[in-house]
Length: 339
Image (cartoon, rainbow, N blue to C red; front, top):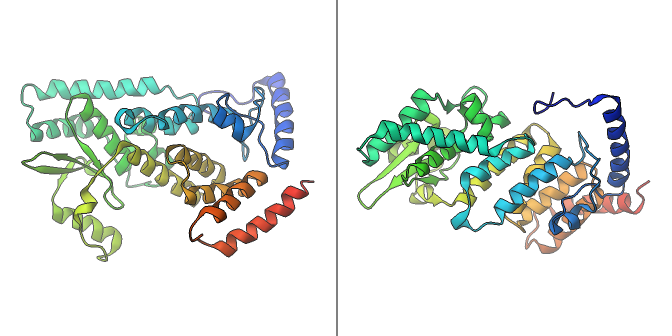
């Protein structure tokens, strides 16, 4: 089973898939891909679409390309209108191509309505935060996944809402978005290795740790978090508590997920994430380099060559130049003699 849908589809479906797979293998051996979206971005990158081709394993998946178009539309929006909740859910479309984003937005609406009921007339910052903590962590049971921190599902907002387990940034996004729905302004804080949220006013600043059931943090607590990760080698600095823009939050979610897939040696999934990062942050040279290396590992040799040559020619001081040059030499041999 995959996403609640059978993959076999009977004899006729199997024949269609074998036909699509053989065509895609021909494209991949030539360093191209068989599927694309009708938008110019995808037409330029992937060539004309074959609507019958659905490829598993190390090949591009048509469903993922459709999912990526949804993310591309969101990434193109200005920061002022960028929807953090919808974009965070769109990340999960790569893993859950049939995900109903609207249903999970409705779940966030429902959580916010429950907070409103609990609040009553007292809208003081501490009371709002305590109401958020009551609904999200006591009633709903959301919590940090300390047993399987690097499970990719901890990064997918839909999965976090279902399993009730998450990592600091995914739990913080839920916290931020429920607060936004009740017109309570919180900001995400990209604290080193442990995302948190904060309330700020001219009178006070309150730091909240959604990974630890909404615990309020002091500056001393923040230093303890740093000591736990960095062994006393990093001292607390005001810059660590700066608010992060919404696109920056989604970027950090993607970088976390990319690292998890690297660790698990799931190259195709890592490639999908890098593609999303580049939609959100076009022209990031380190990501173009990493995409080239992942293209190479997934047998998209012409694309790998183009990315690695672009990286070497544009990076002011290319990291691992001799390593990249060695790959480029190998790729030239493969692309010039694909058979």
